Image (cartoon, rainbow, N blue to C red; front, side, top):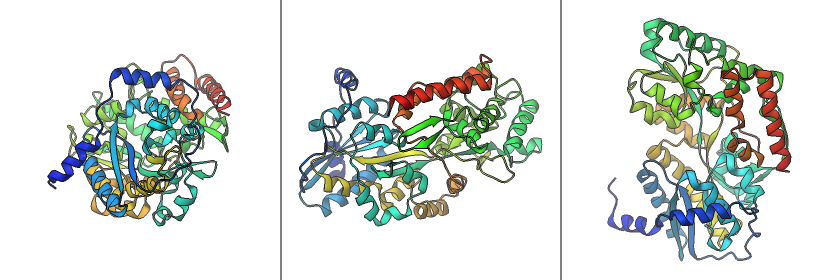
Length: 442
């Protein structure tokens, strides 16, 4: 749809100028200070300008148009209120958001944030508790349980899910047909099929895997009954070294080798690299997200692939997938709390999520909106089936950010596939690092 001159002008006014490297450096330095929000603001102004930070996408224009339309409806409903949006790089979000927590006067009213950041931002004191408003919101009753968990810490709600991302198994239909193999129904069949394909077609990875692909590896751990950690209410103990978790780690790392994906080439690969290998025609299978669809469609395998849920251990079962995605949160420091919550609901509501799916392919967090999306775009069905089978999330602890930043799990996988450590030693060392992070976060 062609955008009007008025809409384009409003867009230009709302996108703040890029910040300089010097400012970024200052923000990064500020983020090293103790993170406190200074408490909730005493004011709740019913007019004025609200500032919003959203993530900038590779092609941001479709997202921007949806956001503009939603804001226009918000402003029409709230006379005297205006909204300014700044699209920030995902890569610098940590410095910028934590600096905002430290300086409420310059902080936005509403932010988009990765759902694994929730617990850390809550511990920092930056996000407003919106439990009451979320509970009274009609749209919220249809929120997927995994998405709801991603905004919940110790039973309290700190935002609204914006979209969910989940992974499934992409496979080459032409290669499978040529070799007379079928999509695997169990994890054991998946591993055997990957090795069979590579043996017959040595120029292909049977299944592209990556030592730095944490969220592609976790379904193997969960499918075997393992957990990352156990506990609740902010107190966790690592469980990656349990017998069940080790079985899943062993299954995943068995895919690294000359019989499938050589460790020398695959140990350092992350999720993007594995999907790229598949899209470019170098792999017969890959674990990729609904968000990978566009990249695969633009690759050499267009028209020669299909997607099924990643199989679990039992025949016909689906391995639990990681429920990734982004949320929207109101900052505690806002002086426009009522308006900010209303804007959060507008941007994360059913109507906007449906439009974001059409524009960007973002999978809605509402079960009914998602079902309608699948009816219109059949490619999302395997991902929805994976979500419906029971997606999982990381521990709701601020320690997860540290564990992720320290690359505890990628290091563990890489130690195993390189032969430096066996599964028991590597998972034991990873558990110690995780427990140190959990202890420091209390």
